[in-house]
Length: 461
Image: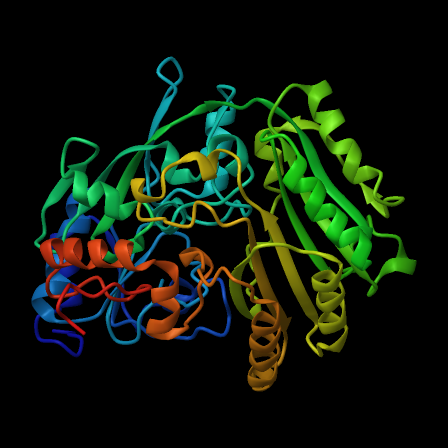
């Protein structure tokens, strides 16, 4: 009988007991199945299990608990820290679980966590409805939602968790429980921002919002300190219906970018106005007037079109650091441009997202995501091709993030890389942290769910 390193884990027994696909190290599909979005993460699980229903998820959770093997949970595999795969443990891959039940009259949806943001958005869009996920369609809704969910509707409808009505969770003791405001309210509070620390989310119940045609798309502007600072000012002054993501980077050689701008620093922005068309046109006008656009692809579109088609084989080498800023003035913008010019990476990027709006109106204590008053989130990223150069790019990213840091020392947990306990603590202010560790002790005292931005049980320090 073929077994893994643990006598508790038999691949033939798993195949006999489960309808799930079970993939072992000797199988032809193994190398592709263990891969995650970031190519620098190269780990070899003892077994990969793709359950077909929630009962099989609970089975695998119990197996991991009883065997003592590390458990990795993957929804979409985009974790910057590589938490969607394990070395020598069990990989619970939810990608087969894609059931989606939309009630267009009640404007709600039950969505299994193998679904991606793009898949749910497209299906809801068929009914003129939507929910604010992230800015990449291939990201799984599991980790995205559990960490908060900052996306193109963040100023209009808040975070993804602000539209979460309930969830089904496989807990460390092997139970499947429904959590909402009445059932296990402490656990429901914790999963709205606390990540995968408290169980495996098998499906979510969302409130959907009327989102049919939006006005937006890509706008590329020259990158100067004045334009960057003015872009952020305009985004902060914009109506709540408008959310923006501004990437300051060397212009890539895309077909729609004029060749004379390739390699020159630009502001490559995505803007989405979720409101009437004429109001959208007016809201976008201040951005178009900042400078003569290099590229202007702003137009009315279906909301699902904000997620363009992706290259499924794209697996970058990248390092990133995230932080919150209070302001981006001329001095900060000039510093961003100077540091980008110094990078030796193939694609250095500083991404700026203005927050506020509905996200900021939710009380800080209402969810485990506690950064409601943070104004701007920033990602400093270097994308490169030679793994041996990773330390150089890591140093650059760290230096830039340190130089930009202001009075807000928090971090959005979904943008957190592998930054140790200090990084995790920055994601949760002290009162939030204390409450989370107490809930962790109640639902996962053995810290089975530890391959994440880990919150240990109270008393385990």
